[in-house]
Every structure is written in C-alpha cells, then in structure tokens.
Length: 368
Ligand code: SAM
Image: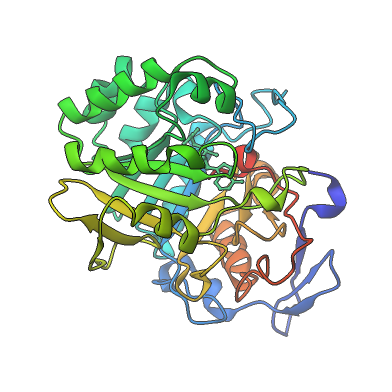
C-alpha cells in the first residue's frame, strides 16, 4: 500500500486540556476520555454504537495458492520477517484488545498455515483469558497433515475456502493443481470431529457459476455449511464487476435443486443468511457484503500482517499499530490506538452504490 493511502494519526497531549488527535487526512478531534486507562475499559463501541468484539488477525501475506480473483497479479509478497508482526507482538495486541472487549478471534492470512510456529501461536491465543472463541480460515492445502495439531491447539471451528469441486477448474482458479489435497484436508477435519466445517465459495461468473448446484448438493451428503460469498472488488484489479454474481441470482439457481428453507440465525452466527434443503444434513449460507450489506451489525476489526488496524474491509483507511508498538509504547497507548481505529469505523461502505469504485487493499494482504 502506498504511503499516502496509509492512514496515520498522532496524539497531541496538552497539559491542561483534553488530548487531541490529528490525522493525515485532515481530520482532528478530541481523543475519547474513556480510552485513557486500560482498567476503565470494558467494551469497544464505535460512533454508531456497534459493539466491536471480533478481531480478525492476518498472520502472513504469503499464500500457497494464487487465486486469480484474490491475487490477480500473481504476486509473491516479498516481506521480510521484520515486516510482519511477530507472534509475541500479536499476542500482546490481543491481550490489549481483550481488555477492550474483544472476545472472538479469527486467524487468517494469506494462508495462516504456511507460517512457521502457527500451531503454538493458536494454542497461546486460545489460552488468553477473556477469549471465548478462536477460529481459523484456511485454504485447506496443509490441513490433512496438520489437523491434529490444530485440534490440540484448541481450535474448534474452521472455514475452508473451496471455490470448485472440479480438479481442473480448481487448478485454473487457484493456479495450483491441489484439489485432492484440499479435499482430503476437509475430510480429515471431519474425521477429527470439527463441526461445523464451513466451506467458503466465492461466486464468480464464468469461473465457478456452472458448479453452484453441484457444490450446494454436497449439503445432502455432508454436514458442511456451504457459504456462497459475493465477490468484492478489491486490489484495484481489472477483474470486471460484470463477473460479480449477487445473492438473489445465486439463490435462484440453487432453488432449482429444491426449496431453500430458512434456518434461524443464532447470536454468534455472523453475517451469513442460513438455509437448508429439505432432507439435507448440511446447510447453505449466503454472505451478501454487496447486495445486502450488514454494516449496521458489523462487529469486526482487522489486524493486517504488516501491523495495521483496519476497521472496514471495504475502506482503505488503516491505522498503523506496528510503529508505535515497536517504538516502545505502553499498553494504554496501544489501547488508545485501538479506540481510535474503532472511532473511525465508517457507518457503512458504498461499494454497491458507487459502481466504479474498488478497494486498493488486497484481500490476501488484509486477511479475508
Ligand atoms: N488462505 C485462506 C483461505 O483461502 O481461506 C485465508 C485467506 S483468504 C484471503 C480468505 C477468504 O477471502 C477466502 O475464502 C477467499 O476466497 C476470500 N476472498 C479473497 N478475495 C476475495 C474477494 N475479492 N471477494 C470476496 N472474497 C474474497
């Protein structure tokens, strides 16, 4: 990300007045008083009274697949070890975040399982007091050989990306001929008792739309939660918006297999709208970030591998936390940076209304 896109702010400490902030986009204001002492903080609320309790952590930009829609330019991130946050740094940030009311963590990437030491890291996150739920998003390539370690770390919920059931199409989308490896990984997760296993399918016209029905039919034979995700225009790619397929169209195609019966959402379900075919043991879900966005209920904050806090996936505004962390700031100061990032969380994104707009950040760098 170029420097002028990176959001930065400074805190101006005045002796007898309130603390002020000033950012590089011309905004300034009074720091929230409740951010001043860690011990006083219980819950993170943004300006729109959304309770932010969910942190998604990208632990690496690297990935062992090169999905054409996620990484259209086939980039191999050339980050040094120093560029990304160490596990110690990540754990410290999580501990600060817990004080602010974060209780749910998802570990993602890039591909989280390619980073050395990840299983120990998962175990340490699970052990942090106040963390109630830790889940993992993976492409499944390394799942089969490591599923026991993931289980031993205390992870109970995993999401696996699976955009195609056809080996050749899978290789075309991911630029790697690894479908069988991923499928065996999913099977081994099932064997180890992971339940539910969510399968993420990014819906793209001309890429996998001819497979939607086959993918959905898996729910008759497997207890998977298959979630069709609307493609989000990211990374300034020329991946045309005309290839986007929105939920109403996907649903219409799936209804040809059978009636989609709504399943009530539970409090912790997240944004997916859930359904089930009659007689199926698995579920179908739709994540409609574009057609029916869920910004008013968004409880998420993201921490990128390079150490920036991003309050909205579809807004390029980020708050650097790595710099202050490495220049020796206190936990209270880190807490204020979290508060500030949350303070700037936009009310919602306008991607659907603004047809030409894309987001500069790349999903593999931000963490999906
Ligand atoms: N490597 C892991 C994986 O494949 O699940 C985690 C990272 S990946 C960036 C997380 C999720 O983001 C995947 O399900 C991927 O398909 C999805 N994704 C990537 N680019 C996307 C886009 N532009 N729109 C919607 N989903 C996207």
